[in-house]
Amino acid sequence: MASKKNYILAIESSCDDTSAAVLCNTKVLSNVVATQEIHKQYGGVVPELASRAHQQNIVPVVHQALAKANIDKKQLSAIAFTRGPGLMGSLLVGTSFAKSLALGLNIPLIEVNHMEAHILAHFIEEEDMGTPEFPFLAMTISGGHTQIVRVNDYFNMEVLGETLDDAVGEAFDKSAKLMGLPYPGGPLVDKYAQEGNPKAFPFPKPKVDGLNFSFSGLKTSILYFVQRETRKNPDFVSENIKDICASVQHTILEILMDKLKLAINQTGIKQIAIGGGVAANSGIRSRLKEAEQTMGWTTYIPKFSYCTDNAGMIGIVGYLKFLEGKFADQKVAAKARYTIGS
Ligand code: KG4
Ligand code: ZN
Image (tube, rainbow, N blue to C red; front, side, top):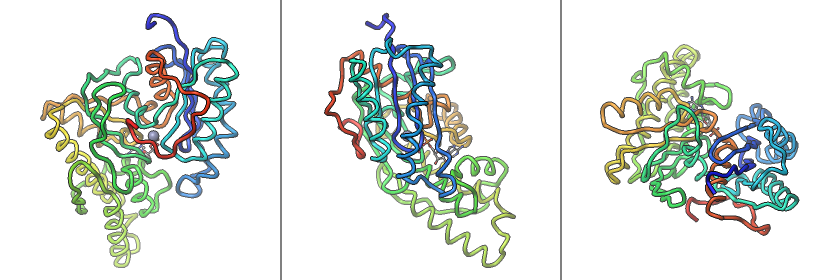
């Protein structure tokens, strides 16, 4: 079957990006993402507005994905969609659309776990992108998730640790907000950090057992720090923005690297694959490259467009499930809480 050309249309609508992709087997032919700008003015994602924007975007985004791939919907072999986890109102839009289209075209429907998709994005066939071998460790770091997963096979994964409160992207965004930076602040913190001193302001690292994470304490200590210093000097933040960003980023990276080291010690697996929007961070990228040299790790970082929420990653899971005949029926419902392997 693998030599045959199978065309999968994939749909992602779990949070605030409406995305559609067309794959031919493991190759992504198109991957269209409509990012919802409306949330910027609120400093975070507003679920009701996200759901409404998905309804407006989904038809044009799907059309665009088919047109870019130069594929007619009659050529499609299956429709894959994000079933969860995510915002219920957002998931419902993609789920209902995918179910109706699969029914109309009389082709198989494939449900996809968004977190598994962030991991399996590494199997998209792309120049300059290596593919990890099983077993490997995956660290998914984004605005919605922070997990370390042992990946034994495509559909045999085990969550070793995850955040107990905020996701790492939220830690970046909330810290940025405290410094008066616009949402999402992660990329700006990264930009300023590159010119600042990471040791200028030490922030405490949380003490969390095992491979779980916690980021809410860091946000609180940054808040108190900024309030205290601003009382002494109202211009403290603007005068020290580079050093504060570098120090915040340094603390976050230390937390991530400490847990990765622990996961490697516990499992003996030295292959690390990362994904999620925070994988774009220049600091984490250079730390991982450094670890290849100093600790003998092998690291995999996908193209940025496959790191952030996108339907290409849903499509690769769709294709892998298609090969195994893992289809969903029309009764399938969106699942806001959907853990890996459940
Ligand atoms: O994967 P993503 O697009 O959406 C979610 O599933 O959340 O990730 C977005 C998150 C935001 O929190 C954003 O601030 C963060 O990724 N991010 C970064 C960088 N680029 C994006 N954080 C730190 N450094 C970056 N360069
Ligand atoms: Zn995501």
